[in-house]
Amino acid sequence: MKVTEYFARANGKTLISFEVLPPLKGGSMQTIFKTLDPLMEFKPPFIDVTYHREEFVYKKRTSGYYEKIAIRKRPGTVGICAAIMHRYGVDAVPHLICGGFSKEDTENALIDLNFLNINNVLALRGDAAKFEDKFIPHVEGHHYALDLVKHLTDMNQGKYLDTNISNGATTDFCIGIAGYPEKHFEAPSLLADFAHTKAKVAAGANYIVTQMFFNNQKYFDYVDLCRKEGVTVPVVPGLKPITKRYQLNSIPRLFFIDLPDDLVRGIQNAKTDEAVKEVGVEWCIAQSKELKAKGVPCLHYYTMGDADTIKRIVEAVY
Ligand code: FAD
Image (cartoon, rainbow, N blue to C red):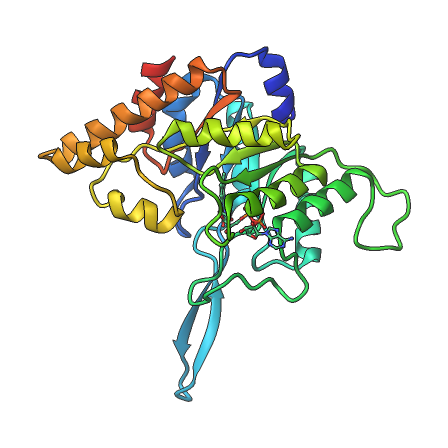
């Protein structure tokens, strides 16, 4: 079933969803099951699986020259989605990115997803490759998430890249996209960034999942902006608890978001690692409770493989 159908059928009730990362190459599917098994009692209607672009490493050859080699450290998104659907009987939402893929690769992946009856996709651009200071699209690939949304919409209308195909089978993808209550870091302003989000919705995106935030007001303001600008699709808040002291610096650096002073002070004053986690978990519980009370469509938790912490939060909220 489509993610947006779950929202429509929930009749105002706030759903829960989780996001998992594919294990590092060499890891087993059991890692994913270990994260998800304890969380399935909360009956998430869908589970997101992230996609990780290739990284480049330099390998010294016997000639003395270095060769640039592409490796994918966390492959398997499509297979993991199929395994999740099979084991739990819930929908899986693969994230698809533009970076590192030709349009042909993307279309073939979408055809595979369609054959597997996976008809939800989160369409993203992806970040710059490591060692590149800005995002460089594949020479034959999509530049922006907007292009990927258009590609999905085309396939939903039976239009494929291969122009020899006429009356192609129509797919039925429900298209999610990313949204940034504190703006995407490359954008000159929140409104400039939002104009591109609006364009993705106009091109066929059905719902938005936000970047994590720690101040609910930023989410509420973002939803207000959407509605004011005529963007009426569901906006799902993305949530992650802080559990380690170093995240005070790494989260703002990696995700370009601000942390509220009360949260920062609480973590700075915590004497032990356990106390730090306690502050972060309690903060996330309070955020979740307020969002639920306001009737958000779904609370979307970035699990980062930490089932115990997420379970504790969800238990406190539901
Ligand atoms: P876009 O919508 O393409 O926007 C990228 C930047 O370009 C923005 O600054 C935007 O304002 C600007 N822009 C957009 N369109 C245009 C245009 N036509 N002209 C000029 N500027 C434009 N990354 C992964 O690699 N794997 C994942 O699984 C993953 N999951 C994510 C899930 C969520 C919920 C979120 C919020 C992010 C996720 N990301 C993931 C990170 C995401 O790929 C990065 O934030 C990336 O830098 C931007 O992706 P986007 O889809 O928002 O890009």
